[in-house]
Image 1: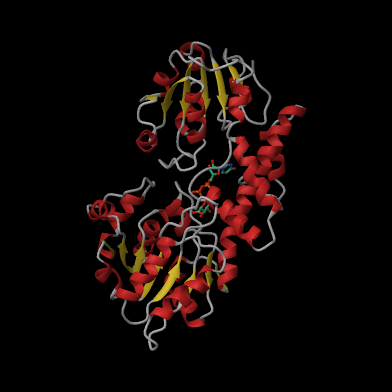
Image 2: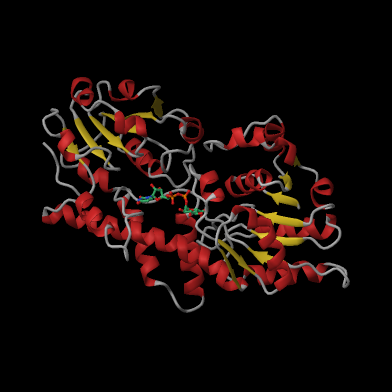
Length: 432
Ligand code: UGA
């Protein structure tokens, strides 16, 4: 099928490449000409493992453009994967989605099915359909389908090719069948439903995962008080099939471009409906506080970090990505600078993104060794494999004071004992 994918962020680009890989003829359109130029040269504007290789492998089935005429005039399906950022009040900004609607009205021909992949508040697809068709000629009324995306950054291709489910919601049976045909080669379970339920499945899934993280983080904080170990607790809970073991990793909270935005958007929507979700309010509040928990731990060892050298390992919101959006580093590093600490930071791939926001106030290092050399304290913010594999005894030999505050529980307590370091982590007893 001829498929136009609008937006070349994580959702659009990965979807486009994966659809090209099963033989569809895909054209990706973006208003950002820099991104399109890179893609035309086979380079990915985002860091995602395996994406460039797939781009090259399926280049005969995928093309890139900024030209709306080229993008829309021949499409059988138009998939919308543009950003839906957060407004200052926490609600969802749909400006980009509606600007795509205007382009479709102006440039599309025939009767393409419009598929909304962007995460949009419940009720949006129905309104979008009305909006677009009120601007089309009476004899050309377009169908709209809600088809939320469940991929995670860092594993996006695997998540798309081997997704747990594909959700298709619409008020139009023919459009549902067309979109079903697009995905059938993947051999993944397909759930058909209405617009609102489809939109809700996306929000409810992300919010539930965020809730699990805040829940386990609160349990972790309590574990420290009562002498329990969160790693063992989560392991013991996870064996129960009703609970499962995933998303029970305690740490300094969730970040990224999805959970923070989607929890706030769903809470905003629920409050607006007069049915405020108390669990989600708690999820957000717990996460906000959890980011700073490592600074509280540092206060056990230093009255103030003023003038001290602080090593920070990891800047991205999780390993496997260079994305720093809503990463704990964005809150913790400014707080450190504010107190007058000298910050040295390392990340294998996110320095470029982070240093655009903080160009001068942080010393960026090339290696973990260089970062911890002479440091008075070290904070681990992302569980990069390089950190997990790092020889723990190096902290003792290189740091001025070997105090390691691990916000991601990178090391087993047994590994750390006897290595001559003070080690604080999340939900586990300190090693001194
Ligand atoms: C998330 C969802 O997992 C995807 O299913 C969804 O499609 C995507 O949002 C989206 O809406 O686009 P993503 O934000 O890429 O994906 O990353 P996750 O792997 O879910 O991690 C989110 C945050 O939670 C990270 O900061 C991670 O460190 C944290 N986390 C995750 C924990 O603190 N503990 C865990 O056990 C798991």
